[in-house]
Length: 245
Image (cartoon, rainbow, N blue to C red; front, side, top):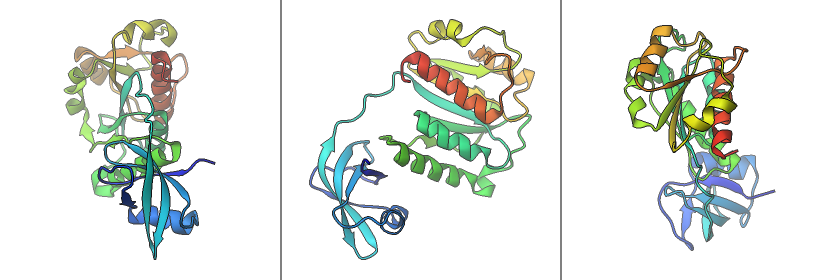
């Protein structure tokens, strides 16, 4: 089994000692029951990874950084997922799995058919950020995806021009297989946005607004996916088409 990965704040060099956050110290000492000298993998704020050893001092845990680890090659396609906020804890699932897929940034948004409540008021945003960090550590990423504060859909539309390409799956889009349309749509694209509607989908006027802003409206086939499924299917298809899967 590989060394357990943790993220630390600050930029370090070989030979430094980094202090783990309180939650991570509790995990490594109480949950995982690691002892002094146990191997760890540490990633600092610059994204640099280190092979390290656990240093225990009472209830605190630190990591002695032995050597830098060669970073993984960057993804060919940098994906941002804009997810219409779903009901309940479905967004937790989206954040966790999108992190595992390598999504660089997650943008929750509200739209005409959103019934997910007020994320900031309910404390959901901080929970999503914690979930992203935990999932990144677990899957071996060298970074944690940003989870933005929720936007309203009209605000999201204004950001489309900042991406090389934007993709909006819609059940009423022309039914062309992704294997046919993606190669041309991804040519020269390095930074892409995926927009997924909430449980009720995006309204026709919202899709029209995204299309007017430059988005590609695509079909995911004949089946209607749940919002959390649509997010993972679309991002996986794009990552595969770009050569990242």
